[in-house]
Image 1 (tube, rainbow, N blue to C red):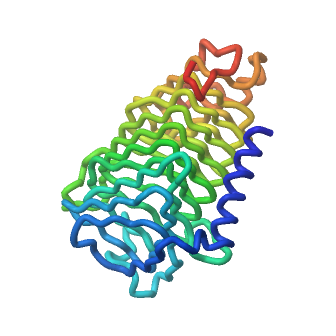
Image 2: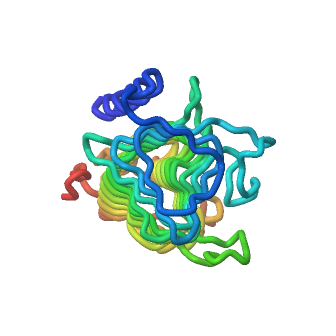
Length: 328
């Protein structure tokens, strides 16, 4: 009930923002497709109608209380700066090669959302970091994106945020697809703390990157809560992971440590490995919602179910929930 009330509050806030148009006294500005030529600050009501590029050496600062709305654009429109191939999106996005500082406050959150009357996931693309360093996103709410935050070979600090009704809340990876770019082969380094991921298609996805995922509420996502892939380093700890189709789903993942989480009541499995996962997984000292070992094992999918898969090591299993907010 507590989780449901929180999600209801978040969604109600979003509906109020969209229906009211925000505070009429705030400055309203339209940002068209283009490149920021110098350090820029956004505030008030901002409507984005095409790709916005923040080049190296330029910082985009978004002030507390700012609401940024993205108009939905179609693939055949002339609002995309760099085409549609990876890592770019067919809908409007902010492409960060310089730096983003989107730092709200507890009572003045920043909002990134759709400008459509009937918003849907993927109405806009992402805050898309490409080989970018020193980014901070704090006390910010992101709704109806393809990927709320997406990073190739970048560093981003995310804290006290809410990701609701996106395709994927946050995804980050090593750059290995676009040869010749300055960030080719570079791993992403992302910390995600004290944030909510709810009602997305997927919560957090990471591939061959460094991650610290702690003190988050990851609930009711359609396909997965957290999906580590390949050579990841870091920890997933002190999180509440429940109500997702798969709580933690692993694909050829190695180097990630999963401990001191509450991982329970996910629909298919609490922790599962994909068909290609032949590496062992460290997932000790977690609470799985029960003291009944048979019930716990039923929601773990690994070598015990398919001899060709890697084993998920869960012992010792905690006999009570962790205080995931405080980390005790």
